[in-house]
Amino acid sequence: MGKVVVMKFLAGSFFLALISFSQSASAHLKWFAVDDQRVNLSDYYASYTNELIIGGLLFCLMLGVAIWINKNLTFETFPTANTKKQIIRAFSILVGLSLLYASYNESILAAHYSVTNRVLVILQYFQAIVALMLIFNLFPKAAATGLIFIYLILATQLGLLEVLDYLNFVGIALYLVLANSKDEYQQDIAAPAIRVITGATLVILAFSEKLLNPDIGLRFLTFNDWNFMHAIGITFFTNEIFILAAGLVELLIGVVFMLGLLTRTNTLVLLAFMITSNVTFMIQSSNSEAVTELAGHAPILAIALILLMSGAGNKWKIA
Image 1 (tube, rainbow, N blue to C red):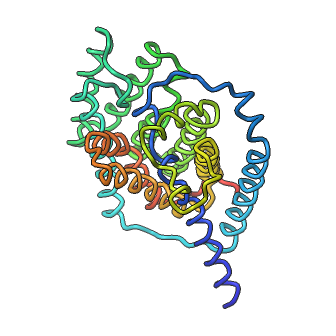
Image 2 (cartoon, helix red, strand yellow):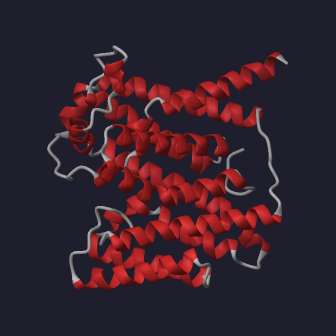
């Protein structure tokens, strides 16, 4: 009995610790801040060497806690075939709605990938067609192929490194193909595939928007007072440290997903992040930003539904 109480306490502590930096870790900062690098990374990290070491130690500690909890406190759920079918339908609809909103907003996949040339105009209309196919469940495998096509064409226009931030769309397409397959093995690897790719996407975002490009976050915080540490009296926790912490938290969540640890708990943390950022925008009366955030996060919400249903799956995990 005592061991169960301790494990539940650690699980709860792990959950709450990750939520601590939910706001800036959840918002896609490139949607709201102009990408104009001004911070010298060498000087930046030289100024925060001690904080970086402490952050790295906490990262390792929390990863170790996650491994221990996953080994000692696990549970399985077995959704019915009808429940699974309905969740997959909701998954397709949410992704479709996000793509449809992007087309309406004259962008491709994400708010800051604006339609700026003839190729992207054609891609915008094709994206709308793929969105409608997903919403109305028309030829899901063909829609998935179309989604991969959109991603690849966007990569030719913007560069592969740029679109790596949205590798989760490749995971979504792969899941649609595998989950709709008649082959049992392919069905079994559908959830692990989207879990690993989602984790990889979060790792990439942790570096591209925060750890290797802190200027984006710093300028975001200049216009959006999201550093809640000041509000609770911890004034030494500067915006620079806040962005560093947010990047490490996002990195941790991504690694935990990739390793297949505490997948449902990790997914709940991710959902808490999205809800917090949307609520914060609404409290600040930033309605336009709230809508952008909600539409942009719809694919992540769709993935969350799958991971809450399936957990880590039986493949590609360390325990």
